[in-house]
Length: 302
Length: 237
Ligand SMILES: Nc1ncnc2c1ncn2[C@@H]1O[C@H](COP(=O)(O)OP(=O)(O)O)[C@@H](O)[C@H]1O
Ligand SMILES: [Mg+2]
Image (cartoon, rainbow over all chains, first blue to last red; front, side, top):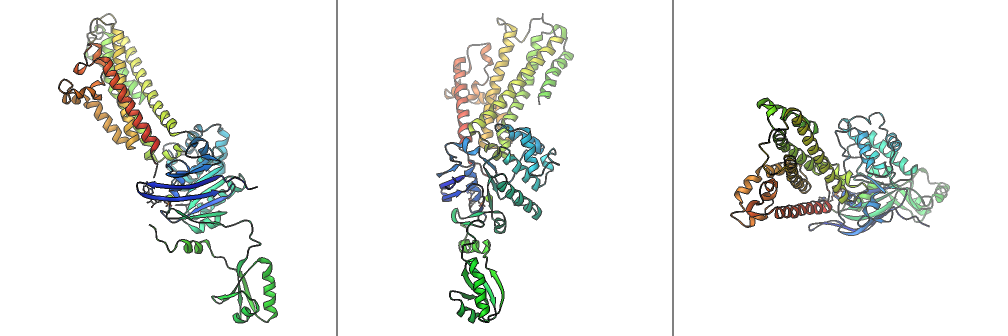
């Protein structure tokens, strides 16, 4: 039996005056994944996230978190969510620890131990008693994540968390998001306009453009072995190869066959037996970037 | 803030005693002067807190983290409002208590107070004056709280509320209820209830019941606007 998705976005639209920012968006976020939300600037990522966490009203449709409607059962729905929407803003005149204590008091049953636990998880032990105004952006980002995790949410929502982080910071963020999803079983919903990042950290990516869902794609996981993927053979005689292996095509000086993993060795053997020299065999991975540009490239931002 | 109020409440009776022949003056006169003076600051502080409580969260950006706690917006706003009121009650009690005890130490309890009208107990009169001042503060704070929620700017709501606080006397002169009947329904003409301590006739021949009703209606409108705006607002950027 398939598990109930953590979040169900059902036919959601957002209109501000006469402008429609989100068009009839339907999206289900499965439990336990790092789920990416990808789109160029102005696509409507932040708007969608704001509706998910109740900062903006939903014009049409509804969003359910753990089965609770954000519109009608806000308190139950939001209790399962930890989030940072855009920049991680905290009370600058208080220390990181005081900020966490402040938020902890607003939620039921959060012990001092839990606060220490999340501080350790995001690696802020050394600076947690310093004033937030002395923090770098990366540290504020960590404090934001700590704040979001205090109440052990089922879902962690991060809006463009890598914005402004250096490569080292991005790498660390990626690592502990993976950790959260693998070890703690938290579902992570993360938005970004950077494709390369999404490829590295997400299991699934939903692509949004101009307020419309363009595509949902699995990046990792099941079915990879049995799926026919394009394989490129670098050979000396392309024409000969095409004759030996029907169904292949020649492209950019390589011979490409759509095939499953098991067949690759066999095709290679046939080529070699027929006297074709094989210099290399590669999986043709169209990067998400290519796919993304393919999907969104033709349309301009409205 | 509380310490400034405390210092003034102690300081004003002492400073006044340097001017006059303290032991001959009444405790109640000193208390009246001290509280009415320090109450201005009390109101200003309460207004600042009311104005910053909501607008501050918006300007710091922390409103986003606040609103995603497992509480409805009404409850969050109510807790802000109650916290503001608790501060104003605490500060009022503090200034009254300190003014009273400082005056008691310096001044005479036997002299007949000159600021208390005849026919009413001095203690009762100063207590009721203080209550009237608090009603004034209470309404001013409600205005500040509403402006803070509607405009999300602490500075603007502090400025406007204090403007109203200091100019309501002038408003009463311009829109005189003796001249215009509709001016009877203006909030400004009813915020100062203390005149009913000495007379039954309010501005434009109003009764105390009428003034209180006007205040209640305005208060409910202020609160309703505050709540509706806060609940409906889309929080962006
Ligand atoms: N409060 C608002 N009023 C009107 N338009 C808005 C508002 N907020 C965002 N928009 C518009 O909605 C679109 C989506 O914005 P946003 O969700 O912030 O995009 P993203 O986060 O994907 O970059 C943009 O075209 C933006 O100009
Ligand atoms: Mg955005």
